[in-house]
Image (tube, rainbow, N blue to C red; front, side, top):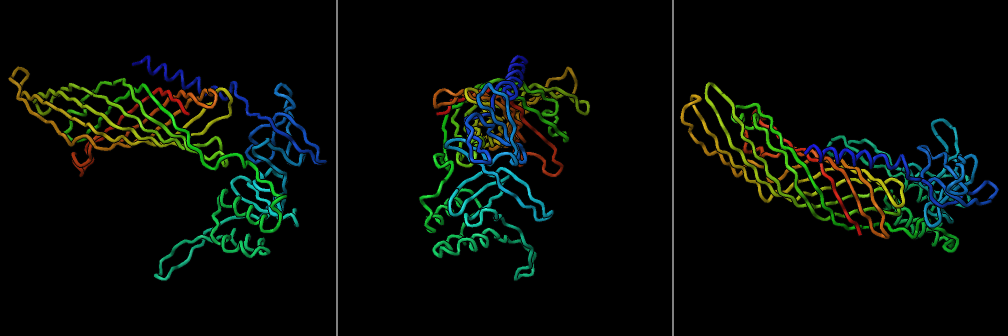
Length: 421
């Protein structure tokens, strides 16, 4: 078993070192100079945390030149994201700064995204950005109870800017402060205002929603632990259950929005597994001798939901994920035979302590994982090391509720191999 732990630890270290060692964050792109000239080359796909600096290389082997929003008019990637330098006013300090804003729609009205906040701009006043936002307001309702409600400032701003297109007003009242809703609204306004032919929608070739199905198999290694504070469960307190290694297999789905974020996705996974635990604890309690034989047989469907983030990479692409899981047991046998002796040499009395309801029908837990994709044409082969911490395996209704006399957990390390279509 130690060899499995060493193997998984080695995989984790190797996988986590990939992004720092060999993966490039540069993609084919362009930089627009203040005079309007366009430089083609390799552009860093991510700006710094404040959205003010990007890296540019004429070729993949060239030295990197850093540009700030003060130096260039914008940059972008063909068929993908486009950024323009805009002036951002800070109302609290009366200061202004140049930043790179992601341009979602360009036309009679343009739509931008900057650090999670949306802005709009009309071409008849291109020096004025209008922030779209929502605030919370505390009020006392008709029942005298203090409550909160949303103040939709974005609706007021859009109503003012789109007054010249009366047909839009009813749609503005219902628009959500989300990228797809705002892109559709601004595009419709530009068409209504007669600027459809001059309109550009960026990332239009990318899907709003995508599903990537796959198969996944794993080798898992699990330990079971009990902690008891009541004499009723001393046999579990003294039990040292065997750890076991077993295969699991199932299906997985990766759900994401390439239009909004290609690197973040939701992992939904279902795997089937069976495993078992045995222990033979012995102890002395009030001058009596207790010997026990405990067997637990389990089979379950493991449902996992996690947020996965992919790092930059072409052939090899590392990822990390974190989330939770639920084990739905369809077999949960708990067999316990106890032998009691009043003296060391006396004949033991046998007691059958089997309990069909001792193991919970459902177990919840948390998971963390790291791995890497190998891109094969349009498919992905994944290798991942994962750790899972399972909360109480036993059924709380089966133990003393008053003093929380029993705790249990499972700890699992797994090496997973997946294939996504």
